[in-house]
Image 1 (cartoon, rainbow, N blue to C red):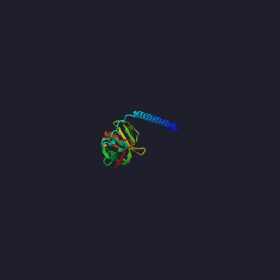
Image 2 (image 1 turned 45 degrees about the horizontal axis):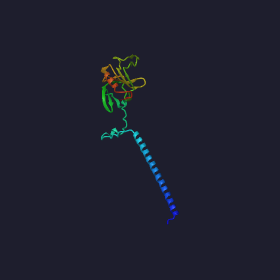
Image 3 (image 1 turned 90 degrees about the vertical axis):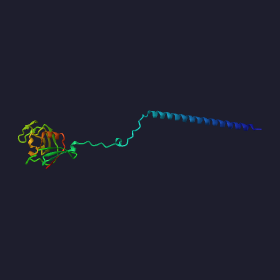
Image 4 (image 1 turned 30 degrees about the vertical axis):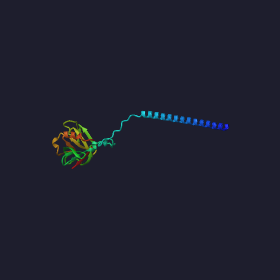
Length: 211
């Protein structure tokens, strides 16, 4: 014979266990649902973020032998025509040489200072450049305008001064003086040569005068 009170207690225990199991299963299902929703939201946000990224092309790889296209290079300094060119006047040769990067680019015959008015030797620089200069007579002060009779020709390239007198390269109408010591210190040139030299120099170009 089974004790009815014992059975009642068993039933109560079983009912409580079933209720607890039901609650546990419901909480687990809710947790899985929340986790699934969170995962879905994260995936959705990730898809939106990826959709906003630009569609960039694959980087171009440098072919063999063309690495300089991709390796940064130091910029090359611009050539300075004043520093690249220098003039060398050789008095004994009655000739001026135009050097560029230590190579002779041109040379021209000249007339130099006569005895008592020698062209000064040393290192100088071009200080003045004038097209169609006006000549002033050193003793009378008379001005001779530009033209075929101007003693300076059509170009003047000054490189020496003592504060009062100046010396430079210039054209001349006295063609037979070229190749001789005939001037008052200046360097006379055929006018076409003076024009050519004028285009090869600038203010600041070194001028070296040698005996």
